[in-house]
Image 1 (cartoon, protein in one colour):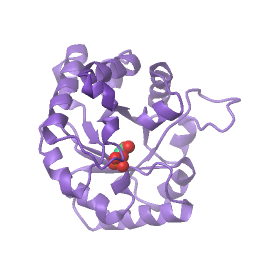
Image 2 (cartoon, protein in one colour):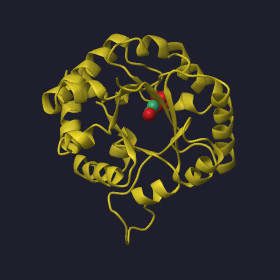
Image 3 (spheres, rainbow, N blue to C red):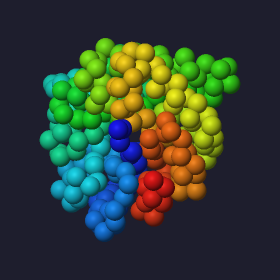
Image 4 (cartoon, rainbow, N blue to C red):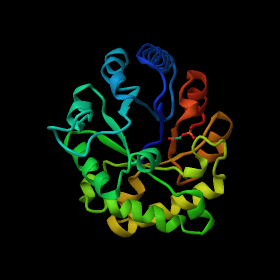
Length: 251
Ligand code: PGA
């Protein structure tokens, strides 16, 4: 059966010392508490090596928030999937809507990033989701389908089986507005259907599909109660141990 997962996405928050403290505090809580889901934190690149050395990455998985779309070479300022892996991190968030919108990441670039991540033993947490105008126009189903097809559907079934998906409606990210549990379930079920059509029911049933967008302790339980919502990708509420653990404990 597919994994239940709560993953944090710190974005561009916390300097190294602050981030290290947050990671250590979280790890200490997890050391003393049995939780019912996998727990992952996504941190800025510069934090990865220190965080991985300071926590037990078996109980607190560590993710980069991005990686380069090239394996190595003259790409000043970029960080490769191999470099991420060498820090001890095991996951990488790819295709976040902020990367797509502000840094021009295309489905084609993301396809390459996914392939490089997998080739280096990283598990991609692949983000999809529509903007408000697309939802209002009833286009959200087509949008997420195209995002999945454009970047993931050239993968073999075996490689697709390593992907974690995160559905994040852009209108809900950092806005305080959350998709209703019904809206989340409707599109998660649709996404699983798209996966089943391509890879068969078993692969679809084994894929964890997380919800992201203003998920917090007060609404996590009702979101996670849906059969097709397998956890959350958490931005703002992942920056404090108590908030983040409040979501972890919703399972
Ligand atoms: P949010 O961000 O929880 O702050 O809305 C979610 C995300 O962008 O992953």
